[in-house]
Image (cartoon, rainbow, N blue to C red):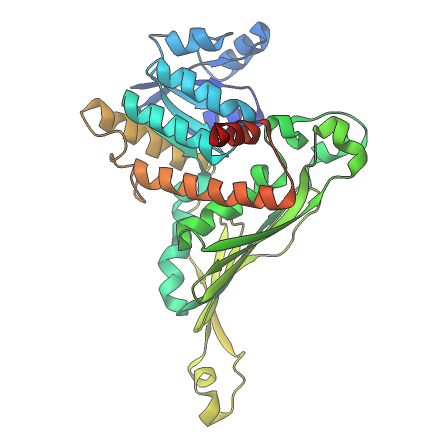
Length: 370
């Protein structure tokens, strides 16, 4: 039985613990919060037995095998390193770290210690998402993709009211790209690999909010990713609602995906035989024949990433290599590490181009200059 503790008492942590009930081989021990009463209440509410009030206490606990880190983005690096130093496996909420440099340090520490470090990137472990990959051959050579996710955040209302929130705070390594755009970036890398180059643009929050946000921060943005023979547009927003579907366009047809972060419907529209023979029969090349792809449904799709993480930890227990052990159906730990790092490369460059900087970036620059 894998004994799991959590860091944080946010809604995402509660959802993770709800999903844990559907995962065999794992049990919840308790949560860490600086507030003793909150730690105790959250632990009790979710069936745990041992609340924690300090990171050192959690990292040193003999009653914990693995830690889910659901804290603000800027804290992931240090908390993950502390847990790994204590011999704990770590499942780190997206984005894995504030930038690629931090992520490399965490993955390297995990390798040296012999534990699993995995990003909790929900769609990469979801069978419904991988139905997209399975359907790609049907639409021929891929020429264009548009992946989009935009959802108005009530935390933007806090900023507009003159109140601070971690969700729009450079000091917390947050903003639209890091919080919601990552759900476009990582599926892109999973489906097509790393692009040759990216061009980014962002709508920054108004200048008069920067005392609250500790610098320029993105409310929405777009990334143009270039591949040989293909382009991709990634659109993300936390200050508007994007009501359009994502789609992947091939020479033989188009895949339409509703909900790139947790696909709930996928439709393939193939050009009909008559349309492909337009020169001889005179039909419009826009004529298509469509069908819906059957998708598995789950009440809480976080169960997939949890189950894959638990599987990897169990494989380590019987002597597996911490980077090469299986991690579910869709890859091993090394594969998901590589997707995480390639995705952070893209996001680091997008933020550089749009002027969004975090404290961790300045540490990276100082290390490069020394």
